[in-house]
Amino acid sequence: MSQHSRKKLTSGKKVTLGVSALAASGLAVGLLVTPSAMAGGSDAAEALEQSRAAAAEASAAKTAAPRTLAASTADSTVVSGISVNGGNSARVGTTSTQTITVKWTVGGGSKLYGSHASIWRGTDRDSGLKQFMNSEQFNADTDPCVQSGDATYDCTATFKIDPQSVLTNEDAGAWKISLWAITDAATDVRTDNAKTWYLKRWSRLSSNAAPEPVAKGKTITITGKLERANWDTHKYAGYTQQTVRLQERSLAGSYATTSSHITGTSSLAGVEKQTRTATTDRCYRYKFEGTSTTPPVTATGDCVDVR
Image 1 (tube, rainbow, N blue to C red):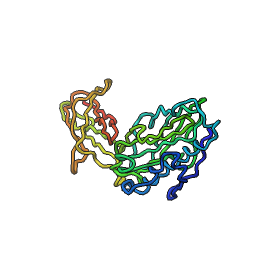
Image 2 (tube, rainbow, N blue to C red):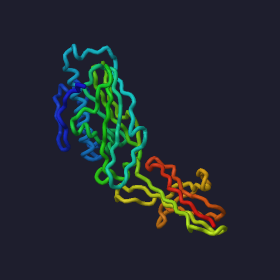
Image 3 (tube, helix red, strand yellow):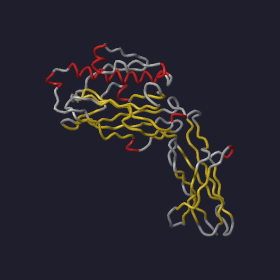
Image 4 (spheres, rainbow, N blue to C red):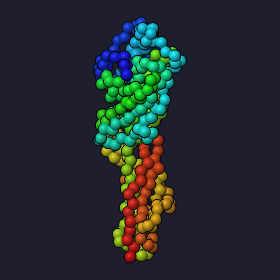
């Protein structure tokens, strides 16, 4: 793929494009970062500006290309097959950096001048920007796309998410994919919301059935604790007021939900405790279905020997 070469855009460096290039791209106004956009943090606003500047460069290269190269029988650039982490939400804990992968396909025009995806959070990119991150490929000034057909390009962008330096608890929830693709087709793709996906705080859940072994007819206590990553403190904390399901099975059977309960608060934050009468050997576990900010999790079962 002969993508138009752009100047590497590094953190802390502003990019200035000529007025004619901006006018040709239609991004002259959008490149100006407003004070409201800066409210989300200067790093986010600068990353947004860099993405727009790169799109403007690619568009300017298309405009300046010789007529024989710019000609295309296609009416529109087409972006398809957009996915984040293979269709799964991204889950981030308290310490380890996670890699988020975005894939898409560009078609339509026979020549690709450039395409990049970014991830962001907020109500809109200009007046409600909270987070905006360009990909590892963008920051390294490398092409995310490879040609896979006569007029088709497969693209992959990766993002390194470090909870220690990038995230706060308010970042959990819905994020969007910002994507642009410029080919020699008549029209290009520039969208703020190519796809919505979810960034979630890693969860964990325990189950312990005691005592073990237990005499028949005695009481078994099944204790569990639901926790999730806190991106403000970088520790795990009990997830309160959440529904967890107690599941049971015989030693040779399959788990089935027998009751649902709400996790505790205060000193019992995230804790759930239930009792059963010991009758036969049996296994117990808790299960959490997840929320828009926290992924589902199922505890490891604990089996009790009844004598």
